[in-house]
Image (cartoon, rainbow, N blue to C red):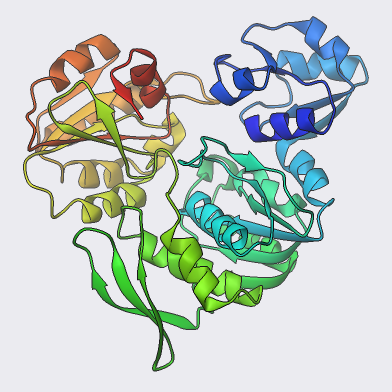
Length: 405
């Protein structure tokens, strides 16, 4: 949403906003007024209301907008209206890894001189931005499946990183989710997914920078050295290679684009902190993503300390046993109060998660960040603290200058 707001302002429109957190950095930097109170005067000023799926249609500001006969569109429809202005839309969907693959494809096209434009649900490390408006040939966008927002996009190239059960609060079943992805495929001229990858990876070296060979059939095409952490990024890179070959990008340019890719914030990101222990921030909010993070960290010495902030009560409820199973793999486990997003508070789910973990490992649930900070001071330089989740804990710690980039 913040990227769409800034894109709109740079297109010459006046933009105002409502959010639970009015302190979004990129909005402030671009002079976009945001409030966290129900300011109906803002609605009166606007010709178009764009709402996130985090809000339902009976939210007071949206209801008021309708009584004033304001045009209201969801985020996915508004994104599509921007994307339609470009010659070729490249839309990256999937349960995991779509932000990274979106950014990888963008970086490959950028170093290839194609001047792509970008919309992504994370911030690029090198410039702290989640969008870029450049040329009109390519618009590379992350395509979110929640509330089927990605079905508004009509793409030249569609990418599906993977499909796994999630967002069951909306889809109700995994079969419904898969049907939605099939509709997404039908909206794309070309599809790249794990089922049609023709490139293979061999000879992976996990120590230091990730190194591996890329093969087509039995022919070695290149050896890549990625500049990002996370063994799962090997697969992300392979998908990006496949996508860019469909766009007729030369192999040497693909290699240059991937090896110069610096990654995204909150994606297995090492940050500085006041703690003696090393600190890694990761957006993982699904059991599979946490499992992948653990695989990446298996070579680390010292204790692996998990600070997990659940994202929505419905997701914790749906995957309660899976969360318990994967979180108990850490040496030390701390929970931070759930980031509810669009949901009302349900403390019983937090208590069930805490009780499940506590059967095999000591675990503490924190509602106050200051108490958590005090506890994290106990670890030494050989230990690694993983701050995990899609909530606001990293921003809270950053605002208190506990961690910084």
